[in-house]
Length: 191
Image (cartoon, rainbow, N blue to C red; front, side):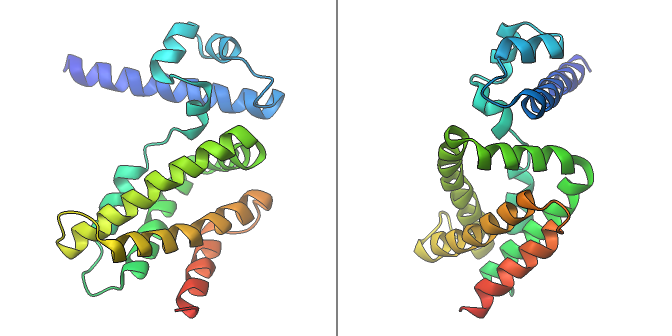
């Protein structure tokens, strides 16, 4: 019981820090907001901030979506083409995420697109996402590790999602899921 309580408390603290950070980034700008300001707004010390987020950038980058997306891809029916499996998994994942974290996802996406340092770090994160997609495709195919086709298909899917997210960040009135659908339709039309 105490482990459960600690886990919930840590998750609540992490979420609080991130929520206050995102609010401050919107109000003051990412570069103008200090870790000390985020910590004070969150009611924690700056050392506590660093226990949860070793670098300021990580408060923007952090989410808990990867395990869900990987599982959703791996669970797609074997008869589906890999690109379709990723598309359906992302669609289902986005429906879940947008229902609870719409504003946070939008703010984080805009911050990454608007800040050169965050954008550069996002390129590295995209490599990790491609590996996640490839790993899930390999699991679907019964492979112990991703082969070249899994990696290429994962890269193509990631290439479809990025412009959809960018279009949504520039015009939040657009439907992100519809944009993702259109992006995957464009990929499929080109194959």
